[in-house]
Image 1 (cartoon, rainbow, N blue to C red):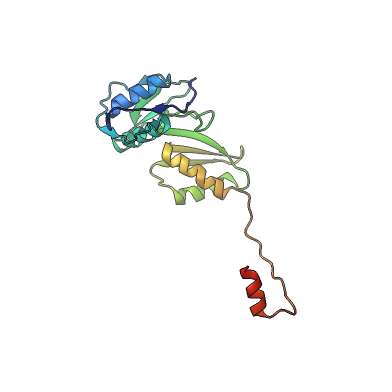
Image 2: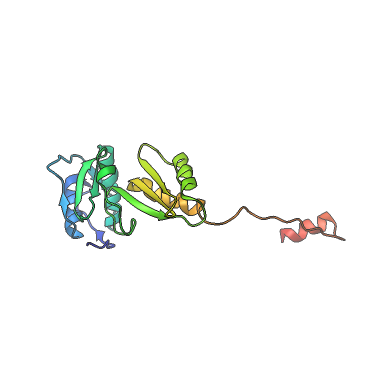
Length: 193
């Protein structure tokens, strides 16, 4: 299984054909690739004098592929990145065993362990925050998990939202403190310091 590395790439051209970017990223990171004979057209633009991290190039490539109605997925029990239509992606993408840590695919499925809020309530909250046409949330209440499937960028946003929603922090607590023998002007001056 390939491990994600923080590879810094230096490119000689600001415009790179998407197909070339995919093939080179897969080669550099030791990933098997199956484009299925599908045409992958278009270019990505990279402007950086210091080079760019491979993760950033993957992000750009995955966004461009999604705009063209296709996505890279990893199928169950396979490490090969396979190009499929977005319509096929939800049924073909594997459940990533370690979340997004080593996932390069543009369409991913992960499990999130709920800590403070019931998975069903988390799913309802996320449905109101994220585009339902591109992301699916399934509450596995008995297991205490939430299954999330969608474009990688949307799944990343869902995890950010879950960090806030499922943080376990209660509502803010405020208390009233009575102050005696002080004028409001003196108190205001002391608080301003």
